[in-house]
Length: 83
Image (cartoon, rainbow, N blue to C red; front, side, top):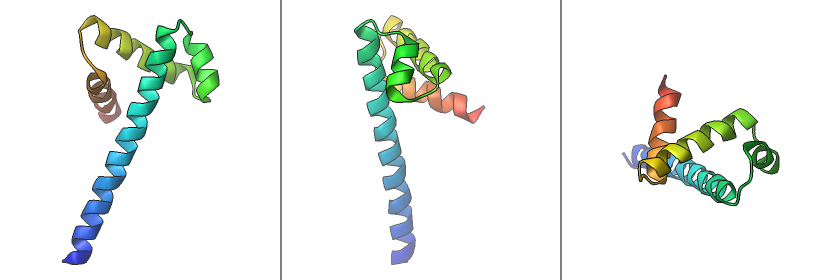
C-alpha cells in the first residue's frame, strides 16, 4: 500500500510541477506583451513556436477583456488539449 501511495503522490507532484512551469511561462509572456513585444519576438526569446505564443497571447487578451486571471488561460489551454 505504501508503494501505491508513493506512486500517487509522485504523479500529483509531477502534475503540480508541470502546471507551475506553464504558469511561469504564461506570466512571462504576459509581461512581455505588456511591454509591447510582438509574438515573434517573444517566440524567439523563449525558443518557442510563434503559433504557440500567438495562441497564448490571444488567450491573454481574452482573459484581460473578461477580467480573468492566469487560471482562466490554463483552463482554456487544457480544454484545447483535450480536443
